[in-house]
Image (cartoon, rainbow, N blue to C red; front, side, top):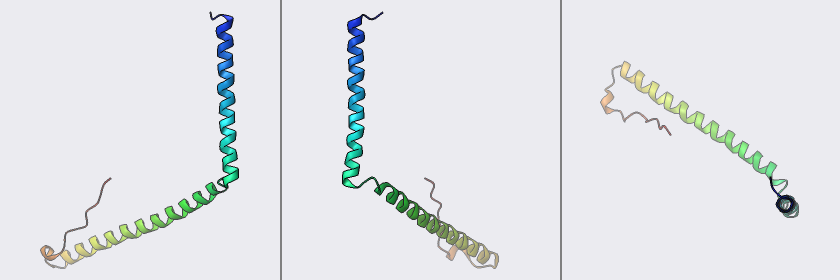
Length: 95
């Protein structure tokens, strides 16, 4: 079992570390208050949500366009057009 001096040193270390953590958190909070960044998080989140909606819509249109191109190619081949004269199919990119 640890002696009293070791327990006392451990207790002092925990107190200092806890106090420094609280002081650091308070410093970060005050920096946010003074620089005005506390309200910016909501603005950033809203801007990211709007950008995400815009990109999803563009991705949906791009996928729809590829589907229409493939449908047109199949229909043209069904009607007897020479498929060798067509440009290659769009390639699906897997990431």
